[in-house]
Figure 1 (spheres, rainbow, N blue to C red):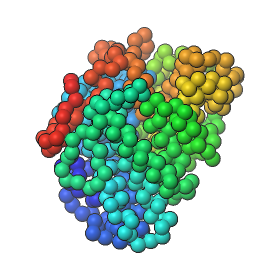
Figure 2: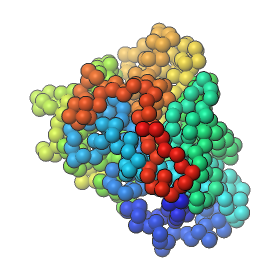
Figure 3: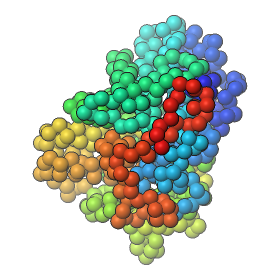
Figure 4: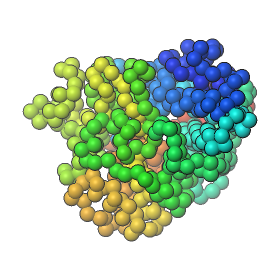
Length: 496
């Protein structure tokens, strides 16, 4: 990890960015220097803002748009987001389950560096915030957010690079190195259990320091941290805690209207969004953007030739009365049956392929600007319902599920399913609701489910015949990047 932490504080403080390597070894003129960052809470908040901004950062390539890029990778490795053609090549090898199995993979290197940079920046803040001049409330807010970011980044790393957490116990398998202070030398891999223990320690400390207030939805408050805590608890199989945290996380938030579903999932001001990155026009990253690959309308080579579609089997599970069904067009290839909105929002050169999505809309054909959603009320409702059902509380689970689905489908009646049938209904709703938002790979892995793309519209030539992957194989773990192995003598590679 020597390379990862080389210039941690500079990354956190960068206010304008392009390619990551452009600023690794230089101090930007508009940044607070490392020596002065902790002289005041105002300067420390500038450092914290650097972490918020990092989630939109371009790393080594245009396909590595920080959190948005990782979200796409996690979904194209699943079964619900369909790559309709090979397009211009972006994310194809990931969808084939090839790239992440190589220690020389640039994408593995990107993900490792990205999350450890978040951790490194958080640690710089945590190391100095107590000595900064300023009100204690401001110190608490900054410290709480830094702790939450550190936990969130460790949580993502351990889910991608380690064997899944087993609720039955043990979890002595290799996790990822826990990093709690600014360092220049990499450490050994901690166990999965140790990583989750530290994640929960940081989240609990953050919850104790934060309240509902914050400057913007790109910042973390107690609601968001409880939402992260709910995700962690569900991944650990602690469903009672997950249900409680998910319920508390969404306190004060509502669901968007059915009409708002069609506004493009690109606006952090949406009442349902709990956490997301806001991108303004002068921060445009062009092709290094979530919307440059997932939107209906941005005129990139990838979007024009490879519109992202929903798994046809999943689409067929959506009732005609459900407002969400219109977010995908099963007849897009037929100009007589196609949703006119698709023609309205795209140019004639765009491919029109059945089941393509209109869920995500960029600012326009020439602009990939759009806010990126990381946490919504709907996710918390679904996580609460799932956790209640897996705890055996079918009645309350059905009530919570009704809250969401009745808002999406006027004809929906409260479920009478119980047990596994109710859990399956909730998971189908989760797949529909959260399509394209980066959850599917994590869900399959945490539940120890196989990848199954058979019998759907997945294209054999695009995924190179990768229709299935059994649960629990070595391929569910990303390879540790070669750069880390070369720089860190304590690092051990995952089995291949």
